Image (tube, rainbow, N blue to C red):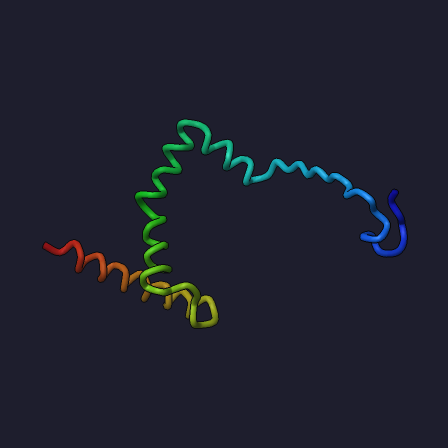
Length: 94
């Protein structure tokens, strides 16, 4: 029994089943990761960029920008990257 008026919770005895099919970008990425070339490309992210952002967010505590405006945010990001590079140089220095 389904009603057209009133509160839906009062009218329905069973919930209608809704199936949503989407073949968007997320599905494409899942497909790409299943291929051999896609897995190799995805594995590169783990060794190049992803750890840097994780350390900047987790260890250095930079989770959001403190300034407004594109130019100010770019300057702040430059300072964050500079701090990261100094940190790496100190670790890698013999």
